[in-house]
Picture (spheres, one colour):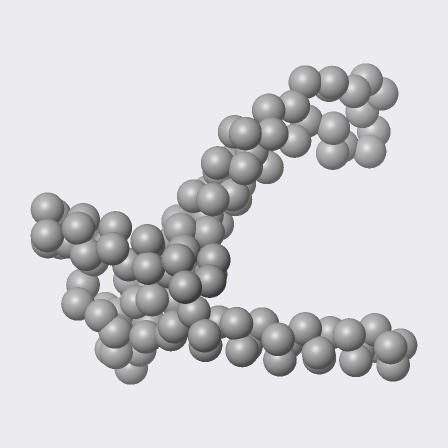
Length: 123
């Protein structure tokens, strides 16, 4: 099992455990994306991931171009923890919609080629 497969497996295991303990936490999956409530659940899951990314961004104190002083302290571990929280929600979203780690990897490779081609062609 490679690292991406392991991450997917860990996330799905957590999702199943949470669903056993709190049945309303996750619907049965894969979701039917033609169904309104399933689409709403996907949207909510994606927004939770976005919220976690915003929490990660709160650790960045020197992003304002007009700020004259720089904050020297930065907690890398807390920043990374928030990014991992975001990834967990995005992994959940991928799992819920019936995609596998292989599907994600293949889509990533395909998109990586597209963005490199765009860069090379002056897009």
